[in-house]
Image (cartoon, rainbow, N blue to C red):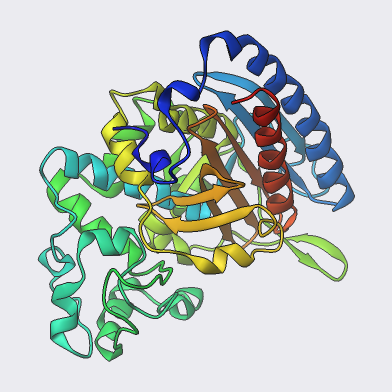
Length: 385
């Protein structure tokens, strides 16, 4: 059922999630929370001298608050608006997990299938290790490979085809399914399975199955699509003299499932609503359960500076992180790629979600999101939820 991932934490019952008599009070509280967050968001971005950003807070199928700040490019005249497109970086993984889960639900893929069924050129130092890595391991970062295998070559803009051939030099550090090892290159191997079983290119399939039905009209996949978008936020990196504009790099666009999606904050509001169960024809309850069931533990997440006061446990699901935040489930993912940072998170228990996009590299995004959820769950506690 939809709430299986919540019940795994052992403290909730469906009937207690959102009692009818508390709906209006809760909405009023969330409204105050949203207004307060807008002020905090603007203050923090101004204080940290960020070029620009955007955020959205949703409840069920409604936008509670959408705010934008600053410019598409530092020193420019064009403001960021609700439809300004940013790079999502690793938030792209939430879409890849969903596309694969769609095909699993349709019986076209199986999480237990070996990845070499779809990528026969993939090899490791010991061939028996290759056959043990399945689609579920790929999408859940539990391949057993060393974390971030060959990201250094992606950073150097080496072609993906050449990188795949180098995996035969690697020996896993643990058995598949046992330990967590975050991947970008290996995660993107899911593209081959998705394309072969959907019979569409990855970009066309995500457009057909997610962007179009959810009316994510500004969303796209790929480097060319991003550069062809006139209303886009330009990337900025922090230097000793402040934020400086840099060129959009194509390297991580090679890894479409891991880091290839572009979208606006308006698009992300619709993505959040769908993951809150508001569009079951697109993302079914059983798929949401599948995506958010905790997999391998991600203990490193518990040491994140802005999150560690609140996290009781952290796991990776399928394209989503699954946190226990002060005893409550929180579904989350962040992304960071040259000049951009992004975060998306939601509480299926409270039926609210939030997302942020910045066109400057800054850790302030983690501070803002962790404090937002701290305050949201405090309000829920006051309401007896």
